[in-house]
Length: 250
Ligand code: 13P
Image (cartoon, rainbow, N blue to C red; front, top):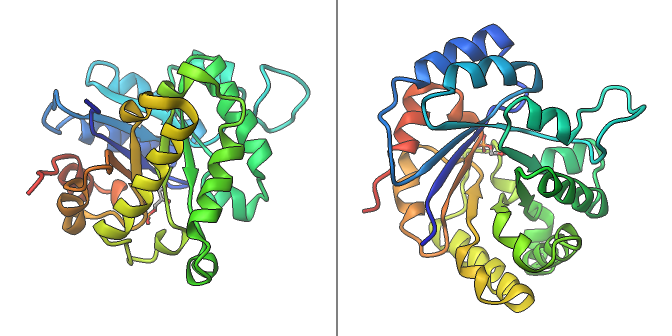
């Protein structure tokens, strides 16, 4: 059984004092035993938010990592630092990092490995652009991103990974993939994992991201291979995030 997971990606929003106020608000959410909740917050807010959420069962995640333990990498943050700060989940290869910071599949693969090596959970983001979608390249793109992104992950380690399918055309646009569109790609992703790693594919959580909101979460979660959501804009406000976290399968 795959436990549903709702993760908020705050991106580059909320200064630490705002983040802490918001974390205090999040403590008012009902406790759910049947789903996991994560907030991926900006680096400077990690310690404060983690302290506030310590006893709540809401996990703290990071949005990026540099794949080395330590060293002369001015401005970067290592997996060891994240681990020590109490981070459990790390987003790797978000499309904004691919597009704005030119991150390659090879580099992302190193991040995924580094996160696993430090016993945290990577959330590997994949997804096609509008142009690729319109050119009918969705599955080719997804397959390449998976193949390279997971290249250092062998055997059972795949269990520790979360995949997030985030079609770039759905991010921040208000236009989500329909549940059926997302399900088709999620099924393809699970098949890929099954072909490469075997039956363990059944245990790997695959999240959908891209304009997830209170109005569409219930329908998305009804799909067989959609195990949760990675939420951007709607994770920044209590009403919308708590409603998404409280999704009900129809
Ligand atoms: P939005 O929910 O704002 O579309 O962002 C999705 C996303 O990029 C989450 O990582």
